[in-house]
Length: 282
Image (cartoon, rainbow, N blue to C red; front, side, top):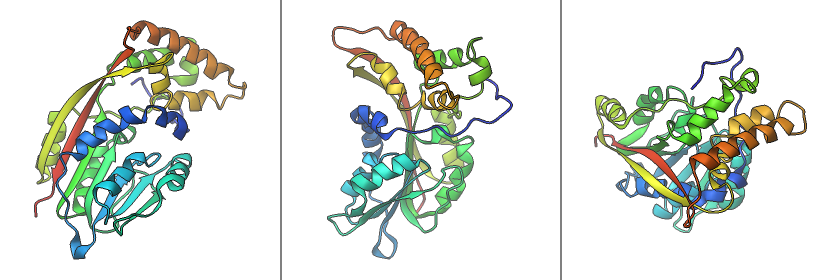
């Protein structure tokens, strides 16, 4: 990430519809994470589950499918994402539990009750120094409870390095340098050490998904829902009816086409992700 500019970057403007255009690929790592999570404890007979950075709620709903009697709460800062999640998923669940969504910032959120499971899916990369929150989150678990998360580990991939180089280029530097909000993620062995030092049983691993995307400029379409959002938000605020955002996107599109050429089967977009499941001792 390039050096910070004089003013801090604002929060990205999120687009639930754009994010969900690749919902299957985005949900798969969460399902792989969830497969390693044991059934969490339910103090006093009631299981509470928290999803930090729930986005449009599609993966939060999977938690309610897995534990239909649980009280599942998704937390996010984006009002459009929360509106989409509430409209699609909020309410009682068939097993007698409930699914609700609240506004909260992952950088400051703290458990308000003992949770059997705290989970975060592809959100902590937006939270600087997120490991400093781990002690409070683990303390918020019931004995035997689990904290599980996955984050992208692809920040050295062309999709991200090209974006950073464009932001720092002469044409865009004054407007965009320091505006990317990628918060550093740790390497798997570093997450493992942090969680073990906090007294947890920990399982940490990484996977690179060879995603085959289809359609015109599919990698650009993917990043429009995630990594490109801070840039589009910033350029969209300059009052030129979108001309700057369109010009930047055209440059980025051309570079992505070279970095990720189409094949007869589609465009291969490798995506590395890091996973951790930490269990508080019973």
